[in-house]
View (tube, one colour):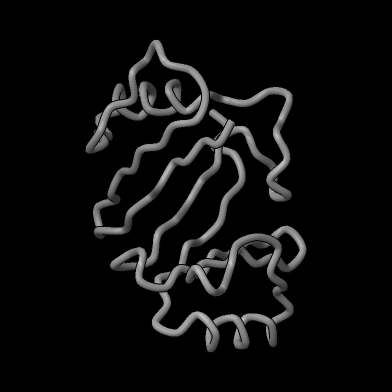
Length: 123
């Protein structure tokens, strides 16, 4: 099962201060708008999202169908299949995606320590 591109979505208090901090670590904005309180930043293959006022806590994010440059993969495991496999393993999500639907969709699960894992397919 291929989960797609991985990133960490950080719940930040001051997006400008966080941007400056991560730029010092070699990250550069590649997507988003600081004025809208969100930025996606990259350093090589490493991706972080900065989100001010959008989440209560940090989230691990997988993007089925994308590589680390947000380019669509020719072949990937569809999010509905990922959700089905997880459910058959006893990992339930809060909302179920219609198995007959196609295209973009998302769901999340929570690990035993309360960490949220978002599966967010854009294609």
